[in-house]
Length: 292
Ligand SMILES: NC(=O)c1ccc[n+]([C@@H]2O[C@H](COP(=O)([O-])OP(=O)(O)OC[C@H]3O[C@@H](n4cnc5c(N)ncnc54)[C@H](OP(=O)(O)O)[C@@H]3O)[C@@H](O)[C@H]2O)c1
Image (tube, rainbow, N blue to C red; front, side):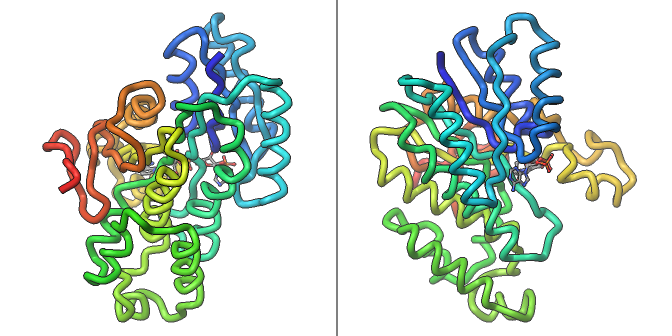
């Protein structure tokens, strides 16, 4: 079985990724990560009831990516369930905070959460195993507004986790909102954009440290979920009128990075499953980034 952990899979894009993994082939198995076991069980029931061939291919794993203890407990549960077999993949999808102003909290889930999960689970992956980090175009959009020096930081191929960690600590210490961030070359200081830019940088670092694995990040696109509902309601329009897509469509790039043949490792992809740069937005359907 190709066993894959998806975090934050009880709803939204994570649920859609879990469903598309199960549809991919009969030998796939999903560890459905949910920080609330009850919500996870409901999601798992929905997945298994929809299609008989999915029975016994879903297991709920309680995992709060903001907590060391929860992530370590989940890793032990997955290790015991896999017995001696390797895990095929990890999809770091859990995320918060499109509209949150709390830098520390957003970084703790969106960036440190990915680091926490990778640190605990990476040893369970076999050679050629895949990691997909669900980041966002908010990352490159954030970097685009940074100073030249900060742009170099966010696009460096030799960046380390220690440096990313130090930058996040610096950002948590900054008080005073957008102006304070801007005066330090950190764009508009959007906690969400910052967290996703840091998660993209971490992807570069992690891939370099683990050349035996295939590790990439991607944006799902602009997707109608609970996270974007406020935006929708604020404008009084339907998702399609706002150019939003479905969670199922939002799973496309992640599914490609899990089962397709991405070029190499340590890259960031757009929602059209084509490479995108780390420091500026590339619209889906436009020519892919070539690394130059
Ligand atoms: N929607 C978009 O347009 C869009 C665009 C770019 C990137 N993204 C990214 O796509 C990913 C999924 O977002 P979504 O739109 O599907 O949002 P969503 O519907 O709000 O789902 C978020 C998921 O993450 C889980 N989660 C939040 N904090 C967690 C934690 N500490 N530990 C474990 N799970 C946690 C949530 O669990 P609960 O149900 O328990 O809250 C939920 O399952 C996120 O990383 C988001 O940043 C979304």
